[in-house]
Length: 224
Image (tube, rainbow, N blue to C red):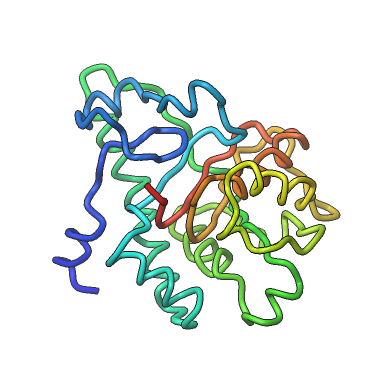
């Protein structure tokens, strides 16, 4: 992708610092300084603490994720990882430039992908979330584990379900893999797309239940 298209498709926008929904307030400096939560996160705080995303899951940038996930265009994973690392750094640089900079978290101690079920992994041949997490970890200078979380059961596809059904569908779907240790750690949880947040919220809940101190989401695109 050329630099011009990247700037146009992935232009920064003011977003909720927790769930990455587009913010109603368009003052990006205010957003960086005060870190406002959207009304959804104020009313019902999710299990995760923050989210980093590149843009909305909408045409034309949705083609990046679709080509990776369903077209096997694996080089796109490295491009998305590089863009996420740059976005993380840009958010911190902008906040540090403010007259009274807020306290910002350090990079995660460990990155982990949202796991696929064995059936879906065998059918696809790769976990697109791990393909993004692996180069992202290198660029952030942190560790990564491909199987920190385990998929305990193969759930039906989420696409046709409303939010309550999505949450029920994912209940007890994840567990910490044998030998996983997250107590006191800042975990970066990686997925290709965030839609309702139900999948990532359930995965974050499991990590927090096992003592994770903080969970930050890294998702290339987010449904507005």
